Length: 273
Ligand SMILES: Nc1ncnc2c1ncn2[C@@H]1O[C@H](COP(=O)(O)OP(=O)(O)O)[C@@H](O)[C@H]1O
Ligand SMILES: [Mg+2]
Image (cartoon, rainbow, N blue to C red; front, side, top):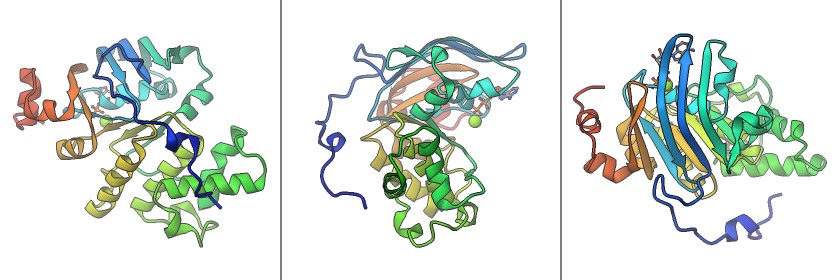
C-alpha cells in the first residue's frame, strides 16, 4: 500500500519560477543545437532552457523540427542512423552526451504519439524499468512502486483488479496513461511527450491534459503539440519552431496574445499551419 504520510518531495516549498533563459539554474539547457539527417539540416542553432515544475510546449508547423529537437533531449536521435546532433545539451549542468544513455533515458523519460505498451501485463509494463534499474528493494517494494506509479498516472482505480491483464488490452487513453506510469516508475526528472493525445478521443485527451497538470509540480514536462489550444491549456512556457529554428520562446500567454515575432503571429493567427 502507498502510505498517506507526506513525503519529502510533497513538502518542498514552491520555488520561484525562473523566466525563460534567465540565469536561474535550468533543469535542462540546450545551446547551439543542430541536427542533420544525412546532408539535410533539420534543426538550426536551437538554444533553450527548460525549467522544472513547468510544462513547456513546442509548437509550429509540421516538419519544423519539434520531434527532432525533443528526441535530442534524451538522445533518441542516437537510434536514427542518419541523424547527427551537434551542440551542447545539459541536464542539471551535466553533458548528456557524456552520460550513460540508459541512465539518461530513465532521468529524461519519453511518451510517444502512439501509445506503445509492451505486450506484457499491466504490472510488468510498470515493473520492468524499476527492476532493470535496481530501484525496488524486494517484491513488496516493487508492488509499491507499481501502485504509486499507476496512481500518479490516474490509472490505478481502473486497473487495480486486473494487473495481470495485457497492457495492450486497455483502451487508447488508458494505454497512454500506462505509458506515462511506465515513465514515472523510474523516477524521472524530465518527461518528454511527443503529441501524446493525437491518437486519442476528446475525453481521453482531457484526462491526459488533467494528468499533465497534476504532474507538473514534480517534473519538467515538455510536450510537442500541433494543437495551439492544447498548448494554451496545458503549458506555462511555449517555444515556437519554424523551418528548423526556434523563433520565439516565452510565457505561454504572451506567445498567444502578444508575440514578438511576425512569424509567430502569422502561425497563431492561422496564416499557415
Ligand atoms: N528519421 C528521419 N530521417 C530523415 N529525415 C527526417 C527524419 N525525421 C525527421 N526528418 C525530417 O526532419 C524535419 C523535421 O522533422 P520533425 O522533427 O519530425 O518535425 P515535426 O515534429 O515538427 O513535424 C522534416 O523535414 C523531416 O522530414
Ligand atoms: Mg513531430
